[in-house]
View 1 (cartoon, one colour):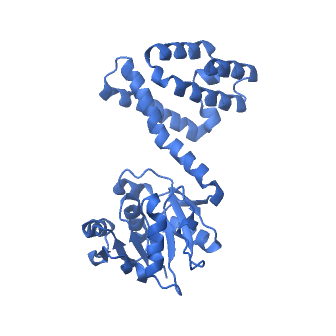
View 2: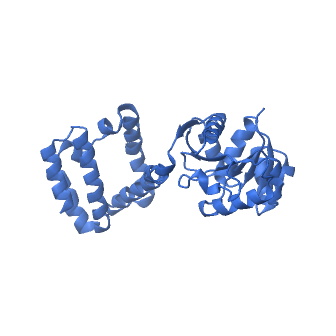
View 3: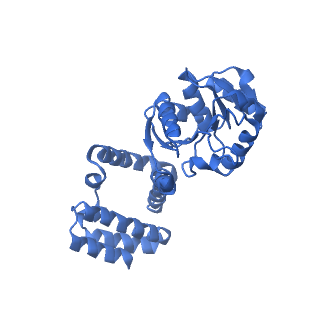
Length: 292
């Protein structure tokens, strides 16, 4: 029989995950929020009985698994509050969803036997509806210091329709940096390209839509060919003249993007060099130009 669960923090991530687990047969015994109306709305979204909604933390004590879907800087303190109201002789498993913090941040100062797990869906949660549907086939990082925690993570990720993969505790910050680069920084790069289009006289409302087909084609290339073979453009072609013209016009008309262009270009040259699509000599020339 699947364990009962309780949710603390019915925001975008917590609501989406709880809805998936509830649909997979995990009974929700409580949804806790400081604003009870918010908990009631989450019950409606998850399609569980509204009497599960509460603003009382003690209501989680009957659950076997507790989901702490709270902001990163609140995980530790909320976990300690949970420990204070639960029976230490039969502690629930605790789960948080931070990509950065280790599961051990939820460790009790008195009970070292509680199963602790970090479960991090590798998704941007713009809203709970999109997050709910995107959890299907979503990669889910799992991290725990115990075999029980890893096993629980695999079961829950699979129940949500996701694909679990392990991340070592001492590599969490690197893992999270990678996730930020591939999501947050990607948006930043799109904004930079959009603003350069605007510098070219393209109207703001048209700039991003004009870039989207190019980006979709890049994603398709990377998915089919991999990163190294999916790379195109002047750097991997060794086109020094084009790169020089880029730098010259950026310096004159959009100097705010010059440093970023140089840094990204150096990394791009390294990819071309490592994949042997760019000769060592040409890569060194390009890096020299970009570093000036």
